[in-house]
Image (cartoon, rainbow, N blue to C red; front, top):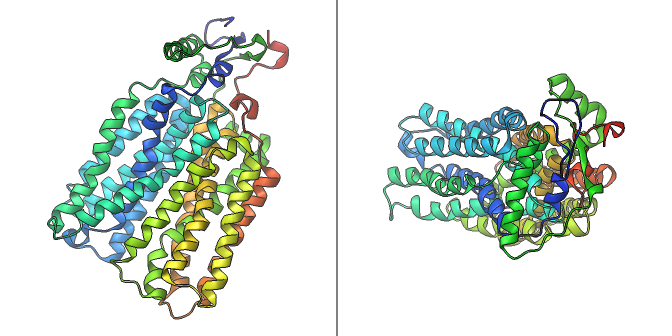
Length: 485
């Protein structure tokens, strides 16, 4: 299996680790990865929904601006966490980070439930955001490296889409926690902050049994440990009664220890070696983030100002919207592995944009009701949710393994900045609900950038379906052909 030499030397080592991981059938081990790591997005959706309900406003005597900043400080924490922990997960490993970042979130979110002042709440909302931002980088990296190539697309997309499952849990909890008939106002929102940590305590136990990525070990001078990890995974698979066929020797890869990655080297990889892929990742993350934040953070305003739905009743319209977002990745995800990445990204981005454009025309004509408006949002975001999840998949699989965490963090941060602008812009377009023209233009613009994002993916995308990560992008530690042996 390995022609080994001591780690840290320039002598290439030959390994079948990637090929052995990709030839595995779907087993309980892979379900443990999905359950143990995929909860991150459920926690994020839960956090956003719990906090957006602003049950703490009365207790802490907060103004509307202060309440709004509670969400902003959490998003800022996510960006900082992604950037910091993204680099760290490439340096010290996936497992250490997906344990550490979840622990940070658990502690910070729980402490926030004891908030006695605005500044105290802000500090721990920021720290909770740090943890979730770090989760995005470590988890996407680990999932892509542990899941066999033929399942990678559907799993990554489905896991990213579970954000909406968390949002639905949060919305359902708020119906009871923030209802004075069930709980005092001062207690309900505090209990809400503990839901995520309770779920997280269960998951952090499961994560202790998830191994370090053998691919990461292989490219960081720990090949013997990588081989041992794969041996243990294969032994578990065989105990389930599965017979594993030998991996052909020609699938082996020769590697040297990963080079040190300074800022200049990383910049050169993104901007000089992979400029088209960088443009692709930038375009996909910005377009989906802008549209999502524009619609999601203003849907209640639209329902209230244009359709005269009371603030308390707007929550009921959230559930079908969330269901559409949850089902899209689950139903459409497998097609990203069979039909192909580029076709499906073009299709999901394109259909989302077209449906939104049709709804904009009907909205402008005054032909929609609150119910039909919500139906159009559900259909549009059924496709947009799968497309948005594929953006995370794309940026995590088209760059070399040694800087996968950083790639996710950089493009995630860019997307979040673009998305942060959208609610303010669309909030201004909604106004007092007296004129439909400005918001109609906004909807057309949102539809246009989604269609543009799909077209960019069609022309610049990578046919990564069914391919090993090492075939999609050569690891930086891959030995030159003339050194391979």
